Length: 85
Image (cartoon, rainbow, N blue to C red):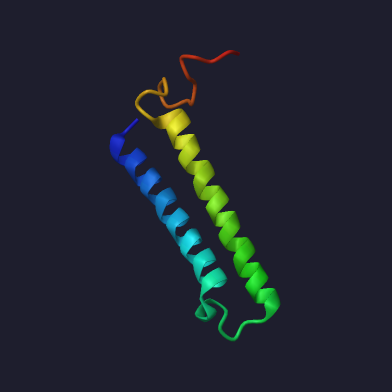
């Protein structure tokens, strides 16, 4: 698989992870993260940030599992050489 494509996918996931962590930090530790929003908005923002964090972590794990140089990735189909099927 194209190294530039893998780098882009990893960078995108890392950026989303950083955004989510920053959002959670602002919401949890800085009043400016709350602003004029209601409690419901605050909770929704926290849930959205957590969802983004989990998604980014899942994407990074998938990249490491299926697309890294030592994953055994074959021909762009997601099959690995150590498959137990």
